[in-house]
Length: 245
Image 1: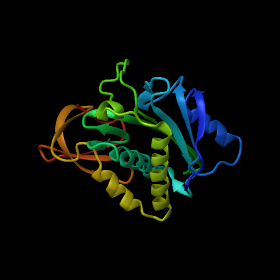
Image 2: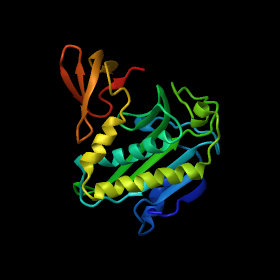
Image 3: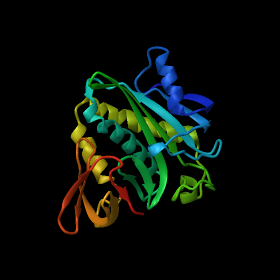
Image 4: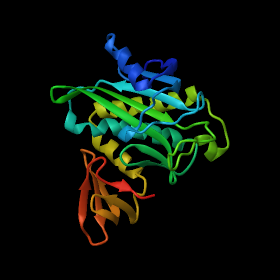
């Protein structure tokens, strides 16, 4: 096992908070992870809450201490998490993809959400904590989230939470080794190949309204490059454009 044994916490505010507290108490190994049965304040992107029925899903965080990684190149860390999730869930079902920048989808439904929190030292990232909720065994979703799905709803089977976590961490450790070996371009290509709606024209919305476009590229800093039907190329950072699903 190329990562420390995951730490189980029965209940927490959020696994990101718990892992940050562990890190603050002393030396913590790379790829240390924590997981929990229930979060009282699970968070998602844009300040959203993450709905999870107690004991049904995988709620976990892991930490990376990158060496001399400039903050402007933070996107590689997001790709490590997204690809680990993509590879793991693809073992169980077809139709998994990465919805830019870091949600995991099954067809047009969301099965994973990730929140990455980076701490800086000068211009470099000193610590990166990646927190993810994976919908595994939940059957009913009661929040107003538009399109949730669980692996159990997809396949009709139940899943062991620890087994899935170990698969994810095995993949994450593999991608982290690739990063340490300078294989960022290989990671970027694998990420792009897994992107949701990578082929053909689809509908998006930005500050100027809705439009149809095809994904042309995702740049090193994470910018989504779209080309609309008139041939105009547009580049977007996080939150500057939204998929219309």
